[in-house]
Length: 295
Image (cartoon, rainbow, N blue to C red; front, side):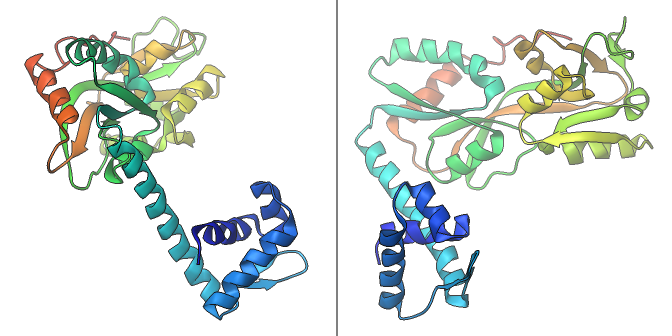
């Protein structure tokens, strides 16, 4: 049983047909069918029931699909670790989009002291970077709360408020610098999924119902939707730096905050990561050097 065969098998299941998988894999259908036949013969069990329009998994096929996913992920992690071990002077750093500028100045100072250490920057959402950190794909990363981490240590870089953002032409924002939860409860709200429970709880504690009109995975998407005039986005204050189209108002009657964390795995630290954290402490972290514009 080869990893290539497992990749082919999962591609067929994901595509629903052998012909569809062949297109995705950029290969012809006969060799793909042959590889699956060889896999079934080796395991001595049927894996697929080939229908006229779509394949169906047998019970053995369902088991293999799950196990193959785990094996392929482990193989990919192994490849990454092997490559990473040959790049001992490279720090693999994760950055959420809203924290790139936050880390840029520090990376400049760090590079001046340790010019031999290079950087491999991974950008993504907090949840994607959390998975990469826990799976040893990055050495450390910035993350936003709320988040639950397994086997990691953290340092708080910044605590900031969540504000209401909308187009300046929005009737509720004209001539206003602050808004109340009561006013927001009557408006269509836009927010990323990470803040859904948090915001619902805040409105419930105030005895209010709210209209969460649109949710999405990425705060940048929520910001874009607000720029299109679809509603009021509830976003960290620093997100205002990423747009020139929106206006922000402070929410006056609720303490709504989010923290930016620097996170790394517990245990023995690689020398370059240890140097990164030690220099950070020597510079009293970035808390005294970051100024989030007030909306």
